[in-house]
Length: 464
Image (tube, rainbow, N blue to C red; front, side, top):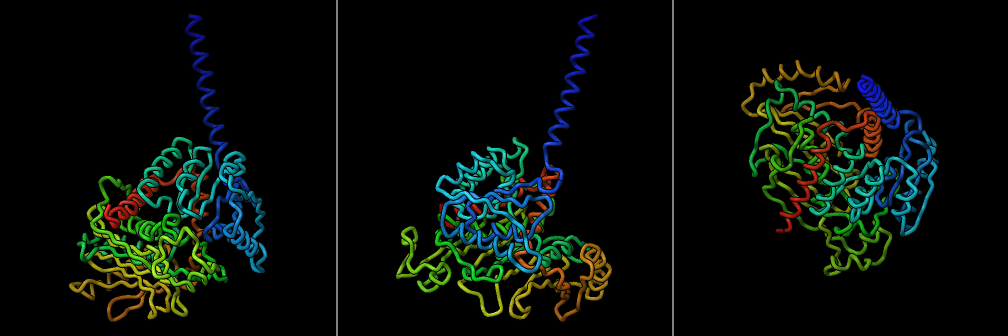
């Protein structure tokens, strides 16, 4: 009898301890409190690292701990942060505490002064850094790409498993989900009376095509962008087919199968892939890097005094049976008045949704709705007008204008906040995920599917 009473008491104590432990764990997490997120910036060799800090967030502490090797990459990053702090309109108040040295990563792990690591720079060791940071108990917000080859992809899968085991978040910065015409393309594709259902397409005529044109020389935050020399080394930056295409593959998944969990072992099949170079002369290289000579590590890619960079790529693949094509092209400089451009088409059984961003659109991305040739014009117009209110509920003041070929979606200027603003939107979404204590169920498997697609495509393109 006494033994039974003791057992009951012990069980009650254990239950109370378990409840207390759970409550303690919950309190130890993120609550959204002011300044509870402390950023670590690791080796900020790409300007995207600074764009995460273009604005401040109540949840993020003003003190930021930077770990990097000494050199131009670090100096350029700090200059951008200073420019945000010193600007007249809505200045930021970041305080950067910098450690510079070749042992920067070991020092960061040893000191562990923050709880979220932001990494955007040289991709040669990025996946290793991500995995090690998660091993050390640090959440990671990483710029793309998180993997630039198959070996990195395998390590990235391990990193996601580590994040799961340690109750941490690993998330990549997918800014293009916040471009308004892309969001609207997705919204209209989810209106069956307007779009119908997604076509399956063929390799020659895919159902979904996304093409992105970028430029080595550009302006960022009002100043000419100085590229590090390693940006032109695909062993450090990654080839175009595994770099910018991460955005395009992500959008194919996000738009065609919204919130659907993808299994890369079953749902992705590479049909074909190819790669080609953009060739820069010395003057172009010097203009974008401020270097008069090619560094030794680039000389393997110099032919007839031209630097040949495998920055371009094309992938044709199927995703759950839907044929898709993604293309990335890098030119040196955009035409006057232009910048990076995006073309996208989604073909439905009732209509195609097309984003164009050429001279005719003033280089502003513009969404068009073009009914299929067999559509009844009057019936389609009625369906579109009756469904537009569903889009307007999420995007007030968006409207449509009839054209000879279909319809143009009219987007108020307030929604065109620009590429740089999207980094803040991604950061805000990540901060909310920290409070939630998890990512949406589909995010991790779909990130894995995305990086499998690009890594496998590189293998195919290289004939491996």
